[in-house]
Image (tube, rainbow, N blue to C red; front, side, top):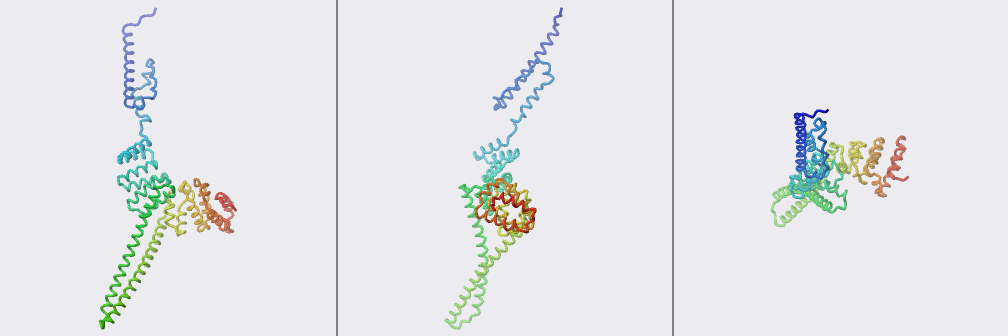
Amino acid sequence: MARAPSKHGRDQALDFQGFLSDLQDWELSLKDKDKKMRPQDSNKEIPKTRDFGTSSYSRNYDPINAVSSSFTSEDSLPDAASEKELGNEYFKQKKFKEAIDCYARSIALSPTAVAHANRAMSYIKIKRFQEAEDDCTEALNLDDRYIKAYSRRATARKELGKLKESYEDAEFALRLEPHNQEIKKQYAEAKSLYEKRILQKASGALKNSEQEMHKLGKLDTKVNGHSIQPVSSSTQRTEKTAVEDHTKRTNTSGKQASKVSVQELASRAASRAKVLAAESITPPTSAYQFEASWRGLSGDRALQAKLLKAISPSALPQIFKNALTVHILVDIIKCVTTFFIDEMDLAVNILENLTEVPRFDTLIMFLSSTDKADLAKIWDEVFYNEATPIEFAEKLDNLRTKYCLKR
């Protein structure tokens, strides 16, 4: 016959059951606190409570670690997109400094062109234009076709007095979106300011030259005046007329000389600028940088060729991405045929990598009949020349097909 459990044994069992019950109540209270602290998660399914009647509970389940892990779950971590959206809300409320902080956190978590451009706009609102320019540049490094970044950088650069750079940004934005009325307005304003700056500089230089010549004319008149002897009134009038004519001739020649000197100065400055540009050529990393450098060297194919040689042909698809224009494409090919004909390997390499630029096939469709005729002539007269090494003939034939040039 089985012996009934002793009173001591029954008390121990009851104490253990009470301990488990208290432990369960404690866990439930922690879950209630967790719900209050995270109301957005109230609709989520609560994991089923473990079976407290098993002996494995005390060995394997740690309620403190479970609660701690719930607070460090992925849902509770800051999110780049939500920080950006919060920044947008602050911007709408004109709380620009708070918006800047939110965009900064978004960029720290995951940098995007939009976050940089939005922070730039916030900086513009509080007149911190240098930071705005820097942010727009970072945005364009991430996406060189982001129109808002070009537009906002044009605004920042205008305020910084960088009128030439502001004009170039507005011009490039207009090329990307020619029907955007706001960009058109910004471009017209930037162009007007830049042209006024050029006119002011030219007028200042001309005025200074005229003043110098006028001083010389007055000095000459004074000397002649002292040398004239007052014999008679008619003689004085004659001599006075002669002096006036001489002064007029002097002033006229002075103006002409000043115009010539200004032109010479402008020519020398342009030449010097090109020399400096040639010395400081660095490989561009975006279509914007390439086009700005290419335009700056316009009129000098040798310097443009030097710019091309500074770029690895394999980098061309990454540089241009979706921003290669028909004008630049044709210009590059013409430069290649002029300066790279003795380096056919490099010429073919450039032509091949240009075909790898995204949307190249679409770009070719927009070639005008004149451009196609020019390129066909280049292939016939330059690339199919007897001097062309035979090992490149097949490659050039394939490239002709890719450039849609019928024989």
